[in-house]
Length: 341
Image (cartoon, rainbow, N blue to C red; front, side, top):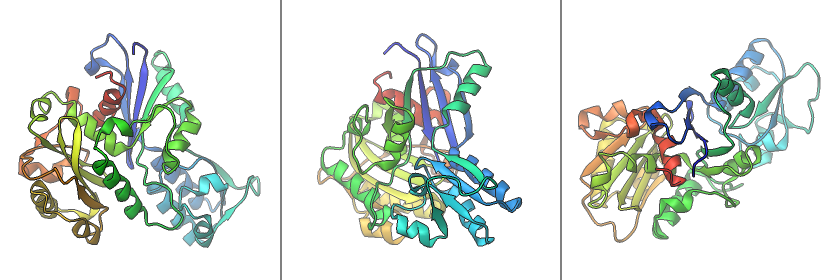
């Protein structure tokens, strides 16, 4: 591939953007770290709440988190919130449950006075303005990572997300199979929503992008044949995978806010010997743990990345920073998924 690519890793706190330019050293490619769309929408909701205004949410399903919390606070003030069915899926896959939250579903803004807010993980207009402000050419190819728990009206998103990870591990654990360049499985509704905004974009999960980014680190690569533990301590989620070659043999995922240095270290130690159970992680508030029967023990080399990686600094794990920029680990993972790296 010899065209420019814009790679975007969408997190709960930030969206990390890399403009890949063929022929330019990756360290010199334009990049920026800005608030994620859920943070932007949350700020818009709180501004409307402060002014005592009703809100109307429209657009696409997107990441919740911050905007979901801001919406709950808005409703708790006795202020009305309206949403189109598509945008409302941001808050729950079951629209009946969305209604019980106090959100009124409608296809158009109910009143001119309501503050109108566009929902979507990628704001192409804002990105085009930012890129154009520096005289840079706007790319035609996109690669995006978002965390997708999967769609289910009845199943817990913690359960569903991890069932999808478990199936992936048992079916061979090839991360490249989770990088979607054409048809995205129906269960991944958040990824499909990004595809609606960016037809033709390459899309994957943020966990997949982080793991592939760690594998692209020059210090990590020589250890892959023996096997590594790749750890991504994100703002919301912590993901740990046992990787040998290009295959994931085991994985576990938890919520970063529920972890301490001691609990994470204990989980990792038991995971290294394939003793950590799915029940242990789930009962502790995480998603779960799974491994292939061939995982066995070992996995002594641990590489960590993510904005909350300082939590484990005392453990002296290798801090992966491919091409000199830890915050762009997911973006480099996206380039790896495109076979650029």
